[in-house]
Image 1 (tube, rainbow, N blue to C red):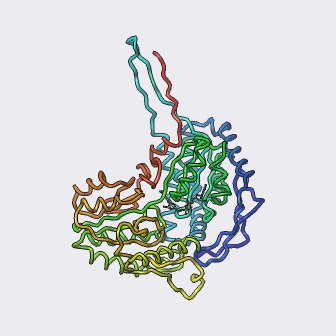
Image 2 (cartoon, rainbow, N blue to C red; image 1 turned 60 degrees about the vertical axis):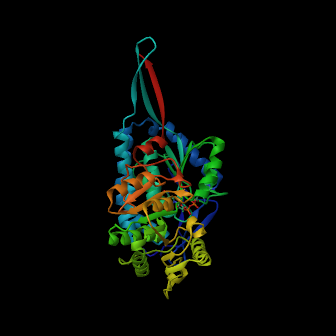
Image 3 (tube, protein in one colour; image 1 turned 30 degrees about the vertical axis):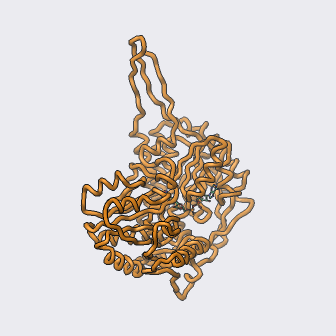
Length: 491
Ligand code: NAD
């Protein structure tokens, strides 16, 4: 569970109900120790073609003939099987990411089963619309919508919450009757491969769920997004990758749903419960090593409490315990790779060059053991930068936040909105009116008040501006993963 697995293992692709290897492979390295964990079979164009063909064939088979209730029963079996494989999934996710066992057990892996159960419920409980229409002759016509699958859906996801984000898309896609080809991140191939085994064990018909491993450009990701047999693409990842995928999708006029990057603001008002605001900000800036799209990288604090808040957050950042993933007290985790660590450390340097004051962290921890070859950085709290600094505008995606003061509510909302991104915002206040004004005035798809990352899977999830296109979650997912045919009958 500390990232020590057999380096000889070769993770296969899963195509048309068969686990397949062959062709090239790539190494997956532990972010905890830097050692090679296993190898992964990279899907070439022929494998991607076979996966798309298998998915198309599955739509014409028993899967395509199933009703919503039957598909919901399949989804519930998948949830049961995910729970049966709980320990394997925890081990896979901890090894690939270096996140703590405690977090994987309480957040990442339980959400996999929850996603399947939620969308099994939603697909069976959500009606389509109907209207009775008065015709020109004074008669009546009945309009009603028939919900149909979109077809073959490509699902491309990142490495930060691998199983959680993958199942967030697979579950509604299957609930709506689609067949899917999924491409997990090259950094986190393991839990997706267990999910393929889960699909087989749960009796999901061959070809309904296909898995291709590989990279983005020039590899399985690009092959999938350019594939003429793919009807829709749902993607979670960086905004720049979203742009590239949108260009690839344009040729085939494929539907896209994008959950992209963020540069999320936290607003701490002087009337807030400061204990809750400090602890909430520790979570919102440093959870998962700061590698959650929803993490807060810009915190604005009302001037009367600024000094106290800054001192307390910096102290808490320095206290976050660096344990091995299996140790219960572990509070932080490595970055996903040496390459990502270079990027984040580059931002730490840039912040200094831009004139930031480092209140906590700013470097790399020293362990005196194998973890010194891993990808750890210190949780970092910065202050002193203006709105034009790159540190204030670019997503860093590490355990880092910048704190700046503000004077009044209008200024706070303006500062929060001063970003190319618009995914999430967090507001700490005891003023009920202000809480509701924040919801209306903040340019973000998600506004949390006195909490962070509290999710109800029925609610709309997505971002504005460079943070995304469309909404998933609850019935919003059904809109993306279904086509509606309106039937008009002259009565
Ligand atoms: P990324 O964009 O580099 O990669 C995401 C996935 O896309 C990977 O599977 C990758 O192989 C694939 N990919 C890359 N280039 C591609 C291309 N040209 N064509 C097809 N596929 C391609 O993102 P990442 O570094 O894995 O993840 C971190 C990013 O994800 C951050 O920006 C973060 O904010 C974002 N994110 C957003 C959400 C959300 O819900 N909005 C959730 C989690 C992460």
